[in-house]
Length: 76
Image 1: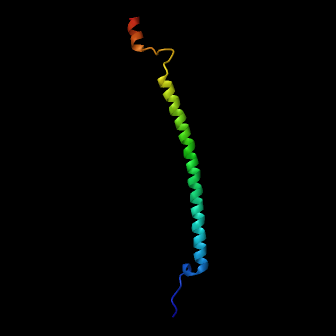
Image 2: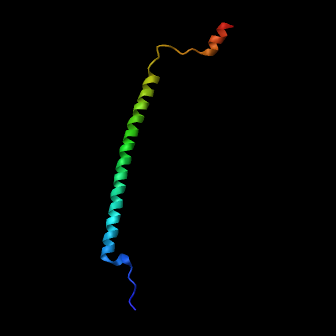
Image 3: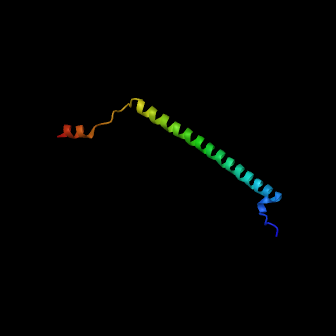
């Protein structure tokens, strides 16, 4: 009796498996590239927000906020 051959031992099957693996690799690379682009956009937005917060906290405000507890004491 001849030994049973697995389909993966046939050259056509190996070529198909390699082609499928390559396609999965390409799709993975495309997904990674898209994720990196999204991350770059997110980092740019975050940097802009942090700069805005830093600018707003470091610049002295023209109007000083009132302390409500002092205003209540002055009225009584």
